Length: 602
Image 1 (cartoon, one colour):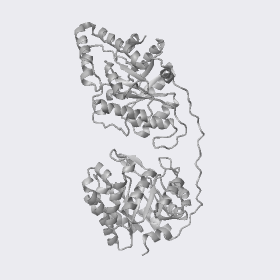
Image 2 (cartoon, helix red, strand yellow):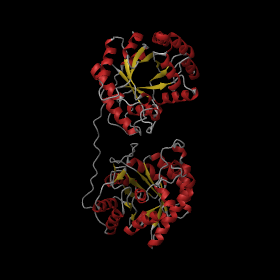
Image 3 (tube, one colour):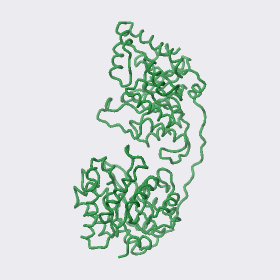
C-alpha cells in the first residue's frame, strides 16, 4: 500500500468519508457534542466508520473535529479531553480492522472558535495538544479543516507542525463567492498556505459542491495537491432539526469528476453527506469519469460602487460647534401602532426648542416596538432628528447588521449602542439574551460598516455613515470597570456618550477625574424629573446604576403634595449645572405626561 503522502502527491485520488458529526448526533441522541459519542456510544461511531468504508472510502476521519480542550470545556467535557481523543482513534482503527481493508485514518482537528479565554494568537497550544495526542495514538495524517478564518488556520498549521511530523491537509470554508466570511479569496488563501509545508490544501464544509469547485479553481495555481470535502448543500431548520437537501448521487459523481479534473487528490464530503454520496464519488473515481460538461466558473459580478453620503447629522454638527443639545427620551409603543408616539414627537418639534428625540430599545427588558423602525417613522413623518438606542441583547450579529443597513437606507444616522438590560428582569424571564457582542462589540460593528466592511471584515456594497454614541454610567458600582469599558468603547469608534440618569453631577466630576480630564467625546447627561417620593425610592433601590441622593429623597418625602414640583425644580438645577460641565442633556419623559418635560427645556 502506497503511503498516504504518495497518494496525495501522485494519486489515484483518495476517496474520503462523509459528514460524521450530524450522523453521530442523529444516531445517538442527547449528546452534548458529537465527540462525546466516542465514550457514550462507541458502537455507533464504529458502525458509521464501517458504513463509509463499505461505500468505498479510502480514508476515514476520527470523530474529533470539535474535541479540542476549549470546545469540550464549553460542554463540561474538559476532563474527558484525553479519553475522547484516544477513543476516537481506537474506534477508527477498530473499524478498519473489522473491514479488513487498507484504509487511511486521518485525525480531524477543527478550529477552537470564539472563546473569551483565548485570543487567536493564544490558540496554538490547543491545536498542538490535540495533534500530539492523535499522532501518538496512530493516525496516518491530520486534517486541519473547516476553518473560517485564515489567520486561525495558519496558527493551527504551525502549531500542529510543531507537535507532529505527519502530513497535513489544510482546508478552509468558503461561501458561494469563493471567499471566506472574512473576505479572503481562495487564491489569496492558497498563496499564503503554499509556504507552510502542508501536503494538500482545499475547501470543505461551505455552501455545497459548486462552491467547493469554485474555490479549487482559484487554488489550483498554487501547484499544491487539492482536497474537496463539501457539505451536501445549504442546510435548513425543521422542527428543531437540521435538514439537508436531497442531492442526487449523480450530482456528487459529477462533482467528483470536476474535482479530479481540477487536481483534487482527496475527494469526499462533509455535513449532510452519507455513504450514498461517498459511493457515487467512489464510482466516479474508479471509472476515471470525465466531467459531462466543461466547468464554467462565473466571475463574481461586482456591485455598482455607491459612495457614502458624508452628510453630517445635525446632532454631530451641534456637538462639534459646542452648541448645548437637548433631547427627549421616549419609550417605543407596546403595541402595533405608533400614532400616539408620533403625536408626542410632533409636539416636541412644534415647541421650537430644537430638541432631538432618543428612543429606548426595550428598556428594563420590557418589549416594545423596534426603536430603529420607530425612529425612521418619526424622521420621515414628523421631520425631527432621532437618536435610536440599539442593544445586542435580542439579535445576532447578522441580525444587527441587517437592521442597521436597513435603518441607514431609511435615513437613520445617529445610533446609541447599549448592552441592554438582561432579559430575566423583564417580560421574558425564561429567555436567554443573545449577546453575541456587547456594547463595545456593537460599536466596533458599526465602525466596520462605516468603513465599508461587515463585522468579519468582508466588503459590503455600500458603506454607512452612522454617528455612534455609547452609554456611560458615572454612578457605577465598579468605577474602574466602567472606566475601562468606556475607554474600550472609545477605541471601538464611539463619537459621543450619553450618561445614565444622574441626580448629582459630582458623580460625573469624579468619573472624569478618574479618566484624567475632560471627556474626549461630547457627553450628554441623563435627567429624569422625579414626580414622587415613591418613584425616587423605586429608582434608587430597584434600577441598577441609578443613585438618588439621600437629601433629595428627604426633600421629596417632606414635600407632600408638592413632591412633583420639588422633583422638577431639582431637574432644572441638574440641567443648569450640566450647561457648565457637559455637551447637553437628554430628559426622560414621564410615562403619563411626556410633554411635561418641555417646560424644563424651553
